[in-house]
Image (cartoon, rainbow, N blue to C red):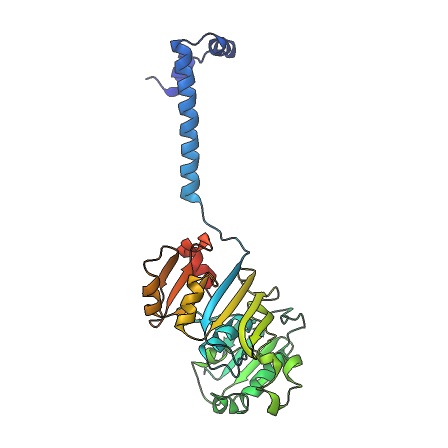
Length: 333
């Protein structure tokens, strides 16, 4: 039986000199056929490499860029203990971080902590801190900052919503751990541990009567994925805040370098900001606002779990928003 290798032995390829003379001779049927076969081979190899590349290629988002987002309402307290409006809460999530954070499926993942241990009776929760933590201003982050924050949570002057809950919880710290002892079992405690931590070196010197009026409520120092850069105001009302990637954030850092948030008074002004290209994206648009832009090819409109709002992004200003995967990646908190 003839095999591929025995065929090659019986039908050897022409020597290099024969091929060279054929290619250098006047164009004939044989040389034209050789040229055609060579060209088809090159095309096939190119197509094959592209197909293999596309099959195994995994898109990896590049870091960098600037995003301008529009929201309804100006901030009052960018402070984890005082935040109550949607704008305040949204900015707190960007600028502060807790021991753990909530995930989309309802579980929690460590942030400032590397791990947490729970006693069998669900009354003692011990968090082990990440090493070399820093605030956005470069100052060291310590267990004392955590103890300070949770002591403030016990005071209704600083914590308007859950001071009673924290009153009976004791907090003990070592340089590397924080331990919470609860008076009774509470399987929901981890969700309470997501609250952002305040920097003691900023807030310890602020008296109770000045807590709400302190400048750091609008010019915060935190440990979240973004760091404060500047705040624009008009008649003492915030109009825009600019944030940058926090290089000290201990886990996955944001993909964008800078985020600017413009504050609008209502849907009409938000719509105008979108149409004028003043903002790239918004999560605060109502379905009515989205309907006005639905026929405009310059925008992409995506449904999100929140039924009261939709995500709108300006395609014409930045074509990268046409990629839905990239869009969700940018807006991921």
